[in-house]
Picture 1 (tube, rainbow, N blue to C red):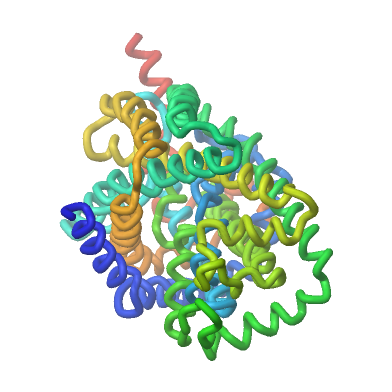
Picture 2: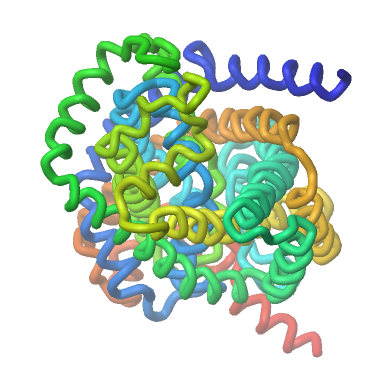
Length: 500
């Protein structure tokens, strides 16, 4: 009874945090404001970001721990998770097909938020005692906003991020893997827990370079694998696709009436669940991706900002769209089970793929996809957690955190997590709040510096020397280059060798 009461209490808090009077207007408002201030950067610079991050992948002559492509895949690893499968099903199951439209809106506006937080993550990153880049909201909120306000915002983010990483980035993901493997292949949850905990620890011991290498090879394969399965279904049901789009756009502004066991939905429900699940999926505005961006090898913050921006496009416009369209075109979202109730969101995507693919292929694709997505999320969030642990307790706490984080994966695989899910929702929302306030406060500086850089290098092709020429007189550039603000691993290694 105690845990039931706790779960209900956290659920009520989560409903308020993610409701129409707190985080949703702040997220959408920030996205709209940044889109205007940055001149619609997500529309006019998307290809440049995709070209640099995915095709070119590296920024020659730059400092950092991992390539821009690895920073992108690390952030994708953390965001392309259960939210792309179960989260989309939840949004459509409760909010109707119109919720997918609001997930798209959240994604498009969120690209401006993602650009801004990634820019700041690189602009204010530091170098820790191990010579690794460290940045994110826990750093840029304090460094970029002078006085006690910045310190309070940065500290609040770090605390909420550490708490959230054990929930949404660990136990809930491990539980999803264990439950699905037990259901599909009769693998005991404790075996899954042992294997997953061991595999996680092996990767984490190597730090961000190890995580970057694993995600660079792992994430593209898992996304292509899942998207190809979805495209097969959509092509096979091509006649239903136009009607699905019509339904999505019409019901985004009208809501959905009750059908069988489906709970009636007004427009506010479609908006609420579309935005909440959209943010759960792509994490734009939460500040988490800025932590991965800060480790990237880049010659200018604008470059990594544009690369990181493409993560939201891939997550929401591509992967989320595939899931949502498959659910709608197969009609599974409105079907009921034997008891007359709507099909559970936990199995809705699996049912849709099973309907759309021959034999048991659909069920396997969703199960394997969920396992890959969830495991990659564990790795990405482990890095987010360790950087915030370092902010709170110092570099010496990082290795104990990695061990503890890996052990908690086993716990998540073997226990029921109703309370954890609700707790994670609350912490995710509370993470976003200080970060969004910071983005609004520092938006003027980001917009000014972005305009200056893109005026001289609109296609992101300038060499390090060319960048140096047109940035030489900019305020803060010399500090950024020398490491007084950013920190410099080259400078750190030089000083270390001199001491030796």
